[in-house]
Image 1: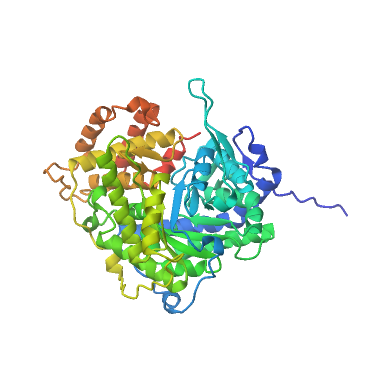
Image 2: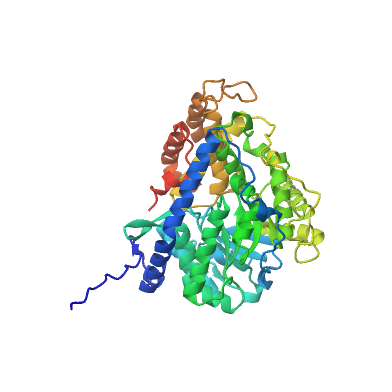
Length: 543
């Protein structure tokens, strides 16, 4: 009787070659990634399909609401698993990309935690992804070093890690469920970027971190439902089983940065209850999601970005509900990002920026948040000072916020405000400059003393589309506060005037790709439908 030979499953196929990548993408690592893909890709696609169907309902006039089928979860008394000691105090977290210099500086920064970000602050070129994974692997091993390029014949500055006890706790943010990794295929399909980022990091580092009670820890972005959270739970359970780790060893903080997710905070915690340690107010993405979700609702158009602050009623309700929900369940309620960066050469402007950061952090600690985010190391002392004064213990889990009573209408409340010419043109400039930098491989860009990333750029891009398409149904267009119609002629004038605004064009990141960025933004704003994410069409242009 002849034997029938079964074809062995093939490991993930890497389409790009870079020096040193074979040490990361070993045959064993690629087999591990391929297994994750085969186990979970079907459910990922089902979840993305559910997103599209839900958005069609919203475009047809429906509004997000608390789910009737999960009322029992919200009503029941349950708590998440205990928070590990390494994450008990998270009062100041710094976020940023994963290049070696940033990784060293962030871990050495004096922050409680460092979120190594493969998502909004990283342009996912293959070179950036490989370098980032390698940098984090060396950081976990304690061997990461970096030497800056020489300047005018002088040796470059050297960077090295402090002892682990003096370093921030590492938390890794993979890309969201909606993104593919085009450089890696499994069975002829692009691999999920989420599974690639988290899976490769875990494969190389999870055991070492677990042995030191330092994780692995993750931030999970862009979730829209408890089912998407359950998918993450299944993925991490699979990884634990494959790597011989105890169930629940891998811990996660979930970013509540989509409008639908705000209505499922209890449910998301419940789906991840054995491993979740907190929720985070990802406010920039949340504002973007509010615009995107309600893009066809003419009565809920937001004013210009600078007027959409956390004192807007719909944002205050979201923040307070997150605190109440987290603390009821024994999870941390993390505050949002301060996007300001220090301003050199203008003491008055710098002091004004720092005052805004101080006021924001005071609002967070007073409301009951357990920690906050900053984008620049220089802001860490200020944020720590505010939280030290307002939060003498390691967290504020005891602050129940029983005074908070948030209804669906509170999370959807329209905002008052205006659109100025400066606000419109500022959105155009931010979009173009960020897209140009992103296409050139930079995912985090200082613009007008703010650290812009994909989340903040998305606000500007989505606002432009919504404002310009306000009159799609045949009604009157929106107007600037000076009476000028918001139409494509206004956009064209902004494009024409942009080069004169970019007087430092030769020195700005992505200067050579400005025209490409203008063309892409022009197509995105003219499209009949708002693209889900600007990084989807832009990604196809990356190396």
